[in-house]
Image (cartoon, rainbow, N blue to C red; front, side, top):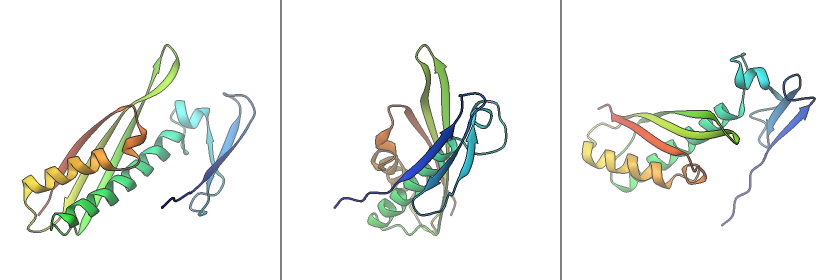
Length: 143
């Protein structure tokens, strides 16, 4: 099975003075503005790192749900935040790390089995497999 989804971006102008719009095939994002200021200077708006974080958090949550289900656990709620770190190095900028923080409500779930599932999801999530960056995890089970 092969699934193909797409996102697109349009950029106009120079790096610092220019701006762009990002869209997704589904229309969930439609011409959302992004710019140098939004990415590097803390101006409000979107940027590639937050979009990567959202993609990673959603993929990880789905993978964790599947793995917990396979282990006989029934998650009621999985809330994941992915914090993406962009560092400047000799070659420009590199995404060096992603920290996943997930909180899960699954009454009756075994804490040890949950931690195993959380780690397995971190390694097996398709978005995790994209990164050369270090991926860390803080997973807690709230019963």
